[in-house]
Length: 576
Image 1 (cartoon, helix red, strand yellow):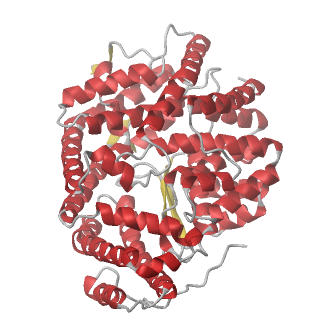
Image 2: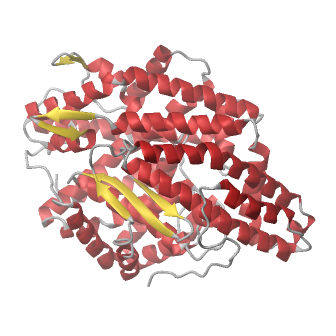
Image 3: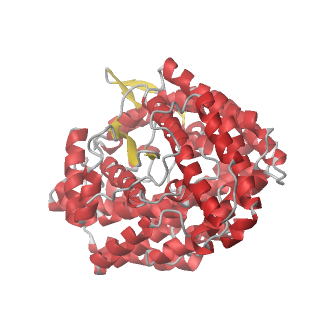
């Protein structure tokens, strides 16, 4: 059964217009002026405030979802920017005043500290970082980020007589005809390079705004600000560096060994960028589904076989506008899950084109949705919507792995084994890429005032440190491959839209692999731990959430070595 919830607050009118500040302002005023006589008064204030915040957050999410689904709709963009300019700054300012009032109250000492310690800790940080002068800078930051989304949403190529999105072009990287792969890869690279200068300009503006916001908040630099803003209480910059060292020591050699094996199997002296996804035995590309409806139906069967409760949760999203899955012109790139906080139902956004990676994305985003649904009875909004990302990604990445035994819903046994192997091998690419992006961000924000050429040089050095064994020399047609490699970083959405959000994927992947190891020997224990931990939402500190799922919160070189050894064992058991 889907967890039900009964709102503990009727403070917000059901039909309120959350895009009209005149309708919201009296409700914030009522909260700010409410008399507080005891801890129970504080608790009531927190619950009523959560319902008001959920209402506004859902209005924002609806605008964001509509805009990413239709980046070329000027009316939608206008409404989104109206929210960013007129509602969001006032909301942040009112939230700051409420946070200040709550943490200054003498009655917070009488609250149940086990229940409220995470909330109060986060409020204290919010108050410390808030500056009124940052509100217009943050609004401008959001508008510039949208320019990047529009830039990517407009990218199309014409390939063999048909206009296609860059996501749709990914299909051809699995084509067994090498000339087709190269032509498709080149078209995408050329299209990205066409907007490289604009991408650099957008990024330079974002860097400047981020540094100004950090300085206004009294931080030494944006890295310090981002660590505090992202509530990284449980690990440090040095821990991130140790993660990178562990990946370099234990994963990069595996990646390059797999690259050499691939080149040998393909009969090539060295891999080129268009040789990384094709099947090494010359088999036709895996085609798990023909339509998004088919993908949804088969995914539902996977979850029902994995656990009846998860199957029911997934089916609850098949109606009610919870899914937008196909790739099309004018749609933003990537995939995400968004929470609609007042109705407490998730939304999944994808760009599916019929690849195995789409199946992985579907079950990944479903994992995020399970997190939202399993914690929906929680009355404090921040505990529902602001769980640590490092654990949120455990929720999603675990589903990618625990789906492995059920891939026969999409494939024959040989093809299912092939899909499992491809996914595990891709982790040897993913973890070094995570280390690359994270280390790049550390460089970006500790080298203030760097030039675009210095940024390129830093990127290329990191690719030499963590990258695959691929030959980027010479040209493809008239395209200079070195130039394409130098601009590779611009395709990483997070650098533009979610600064310093990426190491979370590495921490979570190690947690998900731990949980998968438990699942392989005791599925019931793993799923029980998974669901119990997700039901906690964000109400516990990050290490406690890992422990609730039966996991070690550890991403040291030694943990990477131990965790990867289990992956190597499974790879050895799968046919090549």
